[in-house]
View 1 (cartoon, rainbow, N blue to C red):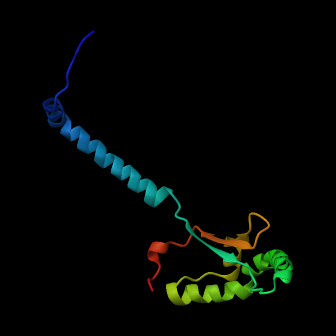
View 2 (view 1 turned 90 degrees about the horizontal axis):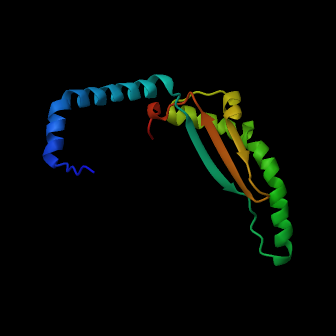
View 3 (view 1 turned 90 degrees about the vertical axis):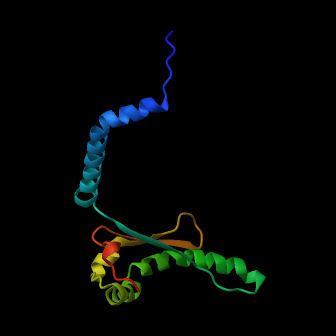
Length: 139
């Protein structure tokens, strides 16, 4: 068995000998990564919010019935989220605050809401591959 020790000086000599190759591969890797990032990968803007559907009930006898009614209303609210009542003000705010113009159809096809379990929590998501948050105007 051959016992060989490697010293720090060995690594210094190795780097001095192959420094040009190391720098070349580093620069080539950066160029490939930048090319993939800017020209191949499609950026995606994604946003989400959670909404709790709940009424304030002080009567303990009707609290359970109210909670069940809220759970049934979640389905209706999910439909309203992708409708004009919600999306029209959202469209106006996008235009006014950020200078982003989207049609109501575009917003409705990219917006969806769901609840995982039969609960009072609605999760609303929006995804758009053509909206770049880096070009949006800041408030």
